[in-house]
Figure (tube, rainbow, N blue to C red):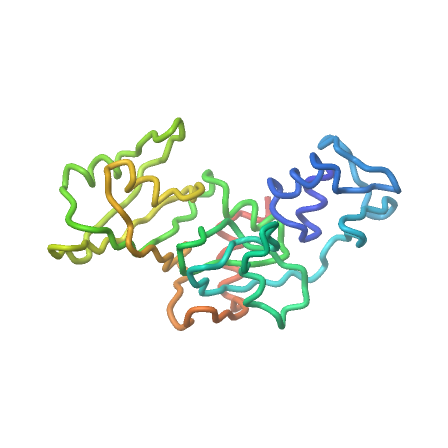
Length: 240
């Protein structure tokens, strides 16, 4: 199998993430640094190393949901020594990684796993996995402004797809909304509202597909239940 698929299935990260490891010369195969993404790996014969440890295919996948607080980086490590979401999971010894990301100032539902194939599919737009956010902005918002966001925008050369936005509560100084997106690009919701000149006060992801955050306090986590795992397997069409 191709090296990026092998590394992802081994739980090293999503395919996009592990491709960076390869390009940066961080992967060693049979005592040689490999930077070619076309490299094929035979799991039964080849010895693959990353960061001094052997990488092998995971036989037991683990899946967790975390209520990420503000002030944490969605990463397994940070070059500036900032707190990461992994600091909230000291009891988990399996090498898991976040599925997608929530930015430093965003809180809410975050999935973590060592199942690279599921992680990759959950973040690909063609699988249409909805991500639901509660969003509070400064001031009010006009229906014409909402129409612009719902139709999709292009900001700084990046195209953001159509979204579903409903007003939960509108007050003089702030407006609470629910925003549903499919793609989950970096800072997508924040960039959408910046496009129409609105400042976000609070952004919280409350659901991924049918999985809802409810029941977890900030910083708490739990393993996914069997029916929740099966739901995401079906959603991601993991038989194909």
